[in-house]
Length: 279
Image 1 (spheres, one colour):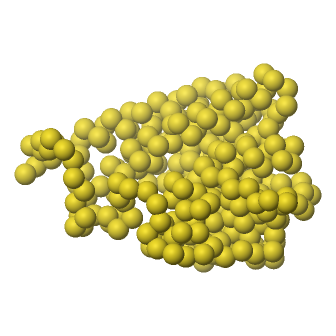
Image 2 (cartoon, helix red, strand yellow):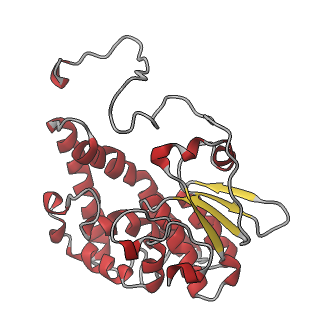
Image 3 (cartoon, rainbow, N blue to C red):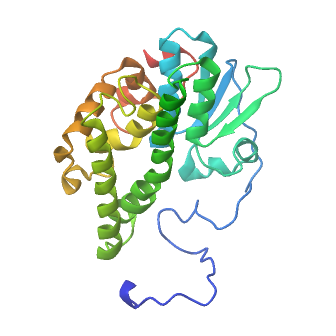
């Protein structure tokens, strides 16, 4: 039966024998599948992650804080192999019941605090250290608007465009056209805003830039889904200029290496437990 002939069943049922590449980790239920404690290092922050766009947001933020001299932002970054189901271990689920990376344990106080969802982690760290999040009400609102814009928009880029363009077992015109149109609209939103601003919220680099760069900056640099030519990313000149400036930041270069297990060997730091791991 072709995709065009598919008729949804009256009640959807889970095909556990599906042979697509994500079948082993995609399921319609939550919770742990096995018992596995999480490792704990010596630093105030324990990060369980992988260098996907969402994971990179947090390692870049932590490296930016350390670059400003906040030694209290020292962290251990433990690899979470999502293709092998590490996110379904009991320890990971206790930190993030949604079983997605990144997950952070803030052990800097008397009682550990769990923080999950990358945007929430960025806000938690920004407020804790008083960096990269404006305090003036209008500027703060603008920053949080662009942060949550990214959180709401990226699923269309990743789970929508990225899945159907790069990962789906068959190429289908309708979903590729649908999500390509939306991703290009999102790039145009960013491009128009950045035509009048150095960074997303103005002259100051914020968590909104960190979050958006991890997805859209990397996309226009040609490092996401091998889709740069297809999306004509060269035409988004202001996004390219913004991405170039952020990529040049030493903390961004360091953060992008952490929990990375693909690409050039010199770009991979599987786990990070001290600054020297990135040398």
